[in-house]
Length: 268
Length: 271
Image (cartoon, rainbow over all chains, first blue to last red; front, side, top):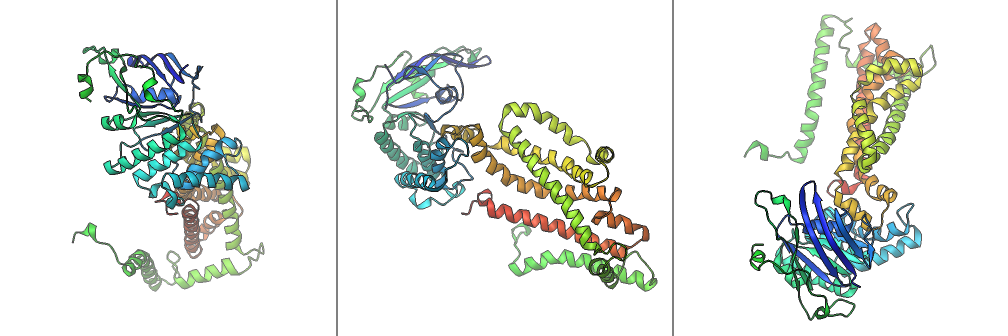
């Protein structure tokens, strides 16, 4: 049984069909990069996985059970921006991920529990290269540092799935390279299942073990909203690399749909 | 160099700050001196000496009738009303702001009615307050509460709605429930904003207080001003107005300092 299964999902807002006939099976520990033109439903798909929206039709299953219909600690997320708390310093921004689940009444820990949570958070911050900035507020951090923080924050709760919505879209190319290295290291250590939306094709190719291309196969020029996008290419990548579960990409299931032509690819 | 690119030096800055105050005072005292030279019994623009004398009477000599030091008992009465009124408004405004700012269901229920209620001119319902609540402290405090709360609540609702959707989702992915999300995410941001909107509401709070005291009170700064008006006692009124202004300015300063101290992240985030 596959880890995540997407069964014939449709999503539409009023008469605007965004996704149609979306089918996908993903194994635990895969790194899926999602590419495609703007407005073709990549981010919508991510929101469905996050539980921020529910599909109009179809099902999303996590180990055979429907996805929780609101965001929770099973799925971590990093947005392009605005995803760290401006009123907490770097250390507390991460420690809050340990405090919230353990303290449903006060939302914070006290005494030794608090100290331990902060030590654990500090360890992770050292790991992502923010050890020197733990007392700063996010507004004092550069864009790259903020995203490092957001990633650390998402990982501290040990989610089963990590969702990244163009996390490096606003960063300089040099910083972006550093972030790629960091992300790959963390992914290999944790064995997380990752979905990452990106506009940068080369980023999609270098990072993922699987590249999913979203595109519309049916287009009505008179009424462009009539049809939605689905996954037109499903390309296994970086065969040598493997997730923490030890499976190589070679024995992953083949793509679901392979119609359309390569030209739609270059257009992006 | 263009005017907009010029900055005052440190010394000049202090000078520029003081200049308008000095000018205003000078204008007053010159006017006062001219009128008193014409007519030593003129009551309209009392001199500094006359006002100092009035202050001595009000602040440092017992009132023969009540045995109080009037300036201080008036100040105490007024400050108490303002503090209780603003305190209740702050708590009510914060609760309403969180409710309507964070939870869509509660926003649907309360936001429109708040908008309508905030349009009721508070002074227009002052008679109702006097009738219903009597002429005592309660009606004066309630006037401040009714006047200030909707403004605070609407401002905080807006602030709550401006917390980005991403942050609310992020908090949920970190394990927050509705209650802890309010405690750890919404509350700190809204309290920071509350201190700022309280500063802006100080003027309104004092306006409502003085109005209520003018109509019905037995003590208070507003009461005293309107009482001595009957005797054209400008030598009391002017120092009282200055004193009220000072009190309001001090409250403003205290709120600003609290904001700086407790919410350093809110402006620039220096740790």
